[in-house]
Length: 158
Image (cartoon, rainbow, N blue to C red; front, side, top):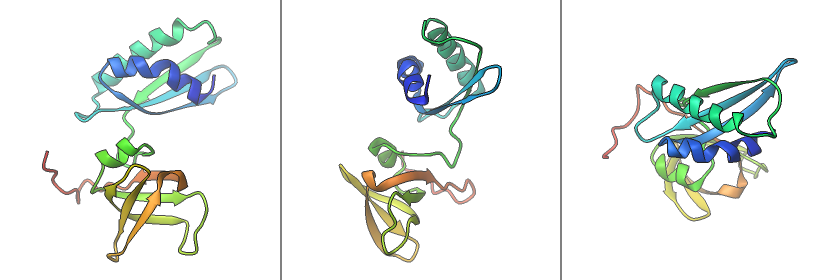
């Protein structure tokens, strides 16, 4: 089972527990598979929540006849420098710093660091540290990760 199939299988259960499935991956050892799930919510992720979601995911996987062999499940928060890729992620983290690696290198460079500005339907504004801005289309992005510094975070008006 690959990561996309795994995500599709467990995402409804994770959502029912009140969390977003941010990412998942699969790795294999000679004796088993390891399934890693990264969950998040606006309220954050506690250790108890990870345990609860892990039990729920285990139920879903145990009920799947296509899944054979031994496997381990790891559930955790995505961490501070989490990967973001959907429009909803960019909206949620508007105003935060992000590092963006582009698929193709324009003449200005492939890697960009700045603050997420206005988010459109197909792109977002990246506010660079020198005061310039650049619009980046979501389909141009290879990887985007938050670059949060807990000691320099701006208070949010929420």
